[in-house]
Structures are given as structure tokens and as C-alpha cells.
Image (cartoon, rainbow, N blue to C red):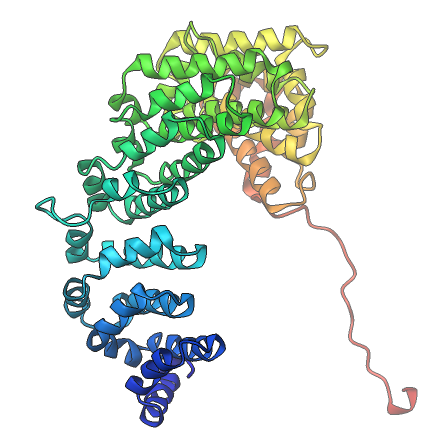
Length: 505
């Protein structure tokens, strides 16, 4: 059977010729013929994936129940897919949920999740996530009276691989809605992550748990819930653990960055917890020569994530821990391309390139002064001697470094001292206004954003009226008007149609 309107008619005709009870009967009677079972199962999956086929599923709840209990992988997979089709296309959601309850399908699905192969496990994750997206379905997964199947009890009795699958399910459900996220918190399921991360005897298992937590931390409301647990403390312990693999510490570091990349995070958690985390990252960056390069890059990316908000940036620029100095120093140190790029991107974030325009400069004068001091110190310790020469050298490197440099410049230039440095180097203005400088869309947009940032900073500065800068200001205005993608008009010879007689050809 095929899909679409025509496909629905095809399914009806097919079932008239081969009634559903007979096809299901073949699965039972031919159980000892795997190829036959596989063929019929594939055919039935096509039937159930149609709206007409799915509408018949509530009448075949017993088949789904038996299929989830069978030892045959083909039939079990078909039953799991049938659950997805039931929730997706059966039409009447109330009837679909009633089928779940009547045939006790949810515990059977959980059993398939923890004991099935990877393919079955993936289908089950999808099925339960769809159930959670139905308001009445949430009550099946999280019974209001606390009765029924409890995921934490299942996890306690499962193998390490099965526990990771349960964590994956929690992450999927967490992202389904804020209601399911609240239900997960109220059911104390987030403690399962704490248990896996605390127990670091098996680093592969710890890494798997961190990978799932990394996915969970991507959701917008994750920090609101996760930071109210002791997870950040355990993540800090992982980063501090010298016996942990560098890849494990790197992943833990990035999770902490994700959790602290929004303003509400700092209203939820105690400052001492964040300070402990920063000290752990500082330790990685201080001993960089003996560490894995990827770990350094992850640590820098983490600082960039934390520095995205004004609260985070102020904390990084506070004294102590002075952790932003690593970012500035590595931004202008060409030893190690990956570290150099990661540091530049992080510096751009700390300088405010990802923040709203009115929040780019920090409210804290001490933090702003410290940022200025760090940049001037990095310049004086380099052969370039001045920030303007240092910034120009970044823009004269390869496209990837240049794009990161545009980000830094776009954030820094809202500060008067940096604007003066930029205006003192006509070569910088020459690069950011050159329409032929970049060849990729990303590069063109980054160059243009930088050009606009300099132009805006100048328009609100008293430097705007300095006669010596009139030519430079004219170049910027022209570049802003031209837009990111348009290059200067080139004279070219247009193709001309030629008319000739038949004999000529």
C-alpha cells in the first residue's frame, strides 16, 4: 500500500482482499518462518501508517499487547510502531488513550525500552514522547496518585545500559512540555542523573549519562529545574576529577555552560556554586600545556556560554577569579588554531555580541575596566604593542579567524576606548568595508554586522564630528548602505544574441 489520498483507497482495497484478522493470523501461524513474518510485518506497518489502517488499531489492542510481549523482534517492532500510528493517526485521541489503559500498554512499552534492541528502543522513545504530548497521556506516565509504574524503581532494577535508556526517555519527556518537565521534577527523576554522574567507576557509563544530560540542558526551561538540584555541584566534581577522561570532563564543562547561559540561572543558584565551577575551569586553563587540546577548547566555549549574559560576563570579569584573562590571552595567542578560535568566539560573547544592544556594555564599571586592562595588557605583551594593531592582525588571518575577529570587534567597539583604537587604524576600516573581502554567506554577514556596529558606535560618539575621520565615516556609511552581499558594480560585457542564416550553420 502507498501513502496519500490514493494510498488510503489502496489500503481499503488491499484489506478487502486480505482481511486484517487473516494477516495477523499469519504472524501467529508462521512464527517459525522468520522471512514470512518479516514480510507480513512490513506490509502491516504500511497498512497501519495510513489513516484508515490506524483507525482500526483501537479494535486490535489485544494484538498490540501480544506483540509487545512476543519474543519475535519483527512482531515486537511492528507492535511498537503500531502504538506510534495509534497516537498519531487514529483520529479519536480519547479512544487511543483508552486503548492504552485497557490493554496496559505503557508498562509493556517500558519493558521493550529496557530490554529491546536499539531500533525497538528508539521507536518506544518516540511512542512515549507522543503519549506525553497528549494531556491525558501524561497521567498514564505520571499517575496523579503515585500508583502505577515508577521509572525510578525500574531504573534501580535495570542494567547500566537500560538506565541510560531511561535517562534518554526522561530527556525526551522533559522537552515535550513544561508540564512534563514539572512532572519529572516532582517525581524526583532528575536524581537519576545525579546518581549516574556521582558514580564514576565506569567512565563510559558516566559519559553516556552526560551526553543525555547535555541534550536535556538544551531545552529552554532546563536550567530552571536542573539548577534547583545538586547537579551543578556533581558536574563541578567531574571537572575537578583528575582520574576522569578528558572527554568526560569536557562534556561536563559544556553542560555547565549551557545551564548558566541564561539570566534566570543566576537567580536560581548560589554564587558560591558558580564560583566553584569557575575555579575548576580555571584549573584546566592554568595547566593547559599538560592537558588535552579539546578540553581547553571546551573550557573556553563554556566561558563563552556563561559570558553570554551580563551577569555571567560580570562574574568572569570579577576579581577573583579573573578567569576571563585566559580568554583574552588565548584570543591573541596564535599557538593552537582550535584554542585561538574558541577563545575569540568566547571573547565575542563576553563583550556582548550575543546580547541586546542596550546590554552589550556591562553595568559594573570594575568589570568594564578589567576588560579594558586585559586587552591593553595582551597588546603590550605582544609584538603588536597596541590593541588596534592586535585587532588588525586578527582580521588579516584566514577566513575562520577573521569571522571570529569580526564578532570580537562588533562587541568591543561599543566601548569608547576600543572605538578610538579602531579609528586609529584605517586598515581595519578598509577590511570591514571591503565588499570583496568575504566569499561565504557567513563571512559576508559577520563582516557587515561588524561594519554596522562600528558605524553605530561612531554615530553616538563625539568622534563623529572630528574632521580627520570624515573620509572614514563616509566609507562606513557607504558600506552600510550597500548591505552585506552586494559587491561593487563591475563593468561587464553582456551576452548579445546573434542572428544568422541557415546556410551559416
